[in-house]
Image (tube, rainbow, N blue to C red; front, side, top):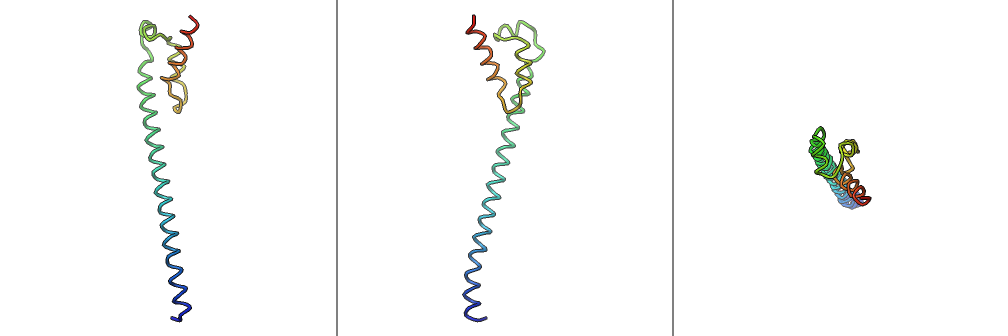
Length: 99
């Protein structure tokens, strides 16, 4: 190995390690983000499942809650990204403001 080859090899190695480390870090961040997204979606599904337990109740239950069956059905049909319980609260608050 010549002096030039020796110098060139020593400079190429740290760059490759740095690139590999950066790629590994990026992959780890991507995996962490995917895990967090999956956990959030699971939480949203569980929340919606619990909210859907309100469907099919008797009318007096909805009156006690200050809402209607139609409002609960509407909120249950919202996309998962939307918190159905909060939207139902907002709807109920708007209806009470008019009273």
